[in-house]
Structure formats: structure tokens, C-alpha cells
Image (cartoon, rainbow, N blue to C red; front, side, top):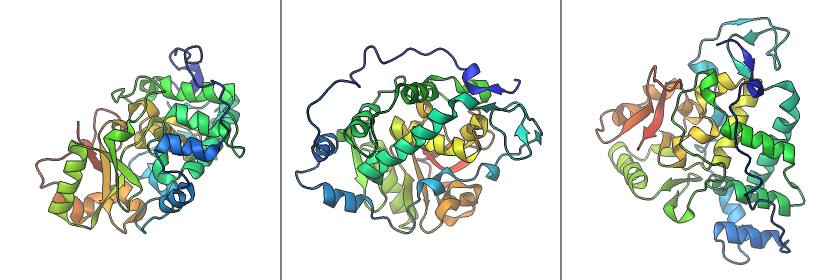
Length: 316
């Protein structure tokens, strides 16, 4: 496939605006009440929950640490290309798909607003926030403001495009950008800032802790479409707009198994190395491989076009 700009090679997608309730008017401008309604908080507990969500042990990863290093498992051939929409310093990538330059403004503003929404709702709650909830939170917060039509169009494009155009062949998990996580079906795992789905995922996680030891921890659990979008766009930014590189480390928003069951584990105190091939050298991983009731989602040379992820536990 020849190198081409992202928005020139996307598949058509249906607009959600005509049928969506995203822009419904409301006279309720009480931001704390809105958070209570979304996350089931008790009255006057917003300050307390924000403090709790900011508590992290040393082994909890920041977003910057999570997106990791693409170069850990990717070999890149490059040459100078002054015609690239987004160009790496002194080089661009052959056969790669980049965000077209005219969409950079929306790309940047969307990332800024996603960061602000996460700051407002807390690190843990952001993992399970829905698209509609994100829109409402932005609307009622004077520090964020409404998502513009251009920003919403960009978000839809990132969700509905076909990533096989740049070599990602994973299964589409979420069909609609407004698909949401049922908060009654998830449980927050203490001292991690992450959630797991109740049932098999939670059962397997605690079974792993029992068999491997307390040095193992949950590093990423349930991710809503909004959460996956933020992680994916952060990765795109870190590789200078290259969606091909980004998708080798993070599934595009509609394609993550974290939205239905899978989770990531790591070694306490191992930091961002938990999301590199170095995790495969730890005692925790060696013990994992001996457990017959778990398997990895992304093995070496997997058919999805994703880098080797020894930390990613396959549930479904």
C-alpha cells in the first residue's frame, strides 16, 4: 500500500448527530450534581472522591508511561519526504498513514479537552466514562466548553475509519461511538485506579494474584471508547501523527478488547517497562506462562498486526 493521508483513505461513516441526544438542552448547570448522576456519588462527596482518584501507588502508570515506546518492537525504514502531511525530523515512513495536516487543529484541541475531562472526573472514573457523558461534562464545565462540530467530526472519524488501510487487522469490538460501559457490571480494583468486569475477568485476576503473588498488579483494566480514544490519540501524537505506528502499540478506539473483558498486568515497581518486551523477562511473567487458565492476546507475529504484548491477558 502506498503512503497516503489518513482522511483521504477512510471509509464512509454515518453521522450520529441527527439521532443523537448529545445536544439536548438542560437547565441543570450544577456540575457537581452532574458528576453525581454519572458516577453514582453521594451528595457532597465530590471533593472526597477527587482526592481518592488522585491517590496512586508508585507502580501505577501515568498516561505518558502507558503509551510506551513504539521502537521497543518495531523496525522502521525511512527516507526524506518533504511532501508528508506530518513529517518526522529528517525522515518520514514508507507505506504509512498520517493524519492530514488540515485536521491537526481538531486533533490538538480534542486531545486538550480529553485531558481536561480526565482531570475533572478523576483518573479512575475516566476509564469508564461514555461518549455522551464526556460531551455533557465538557458542556457544563466552564473550564472545558462544548466540543465543536469539527472536533466531534474528528472523533467520529477516528472511531469509524478502517485501520486495515495501514495494516491493523484486529476485530471490531464496538460498533457505535456512543456504546457505553454498564457501571453495574464493573468493579474498581483497590490501589490500581482501574476497573475490571465482574465475573470471569475479576475471577481470573484474583486467581492470578493468588498463584503468582502480590508483586503482580493490574496496570490497565476496563477502557471505555473515550478512554481508548485518549490513549490512541496520545500515541498518535507521540509518533508525530503516524497512525500506522500508533496502531502497533494501541488498538484504535473501536477495536480494543479492554472494552469487553481483557486486562493488562505488570510487576509492581517496574514502571513503563511493564509495557515493553522486558516484562517477558520477569518472574511474574514466567509464572504466568505456567498457568493453563490464561492466555496472551497478542503473541509474537500475531495476525492482528500488533506488537508482542506479554502483559495483555486474553479473556474472550
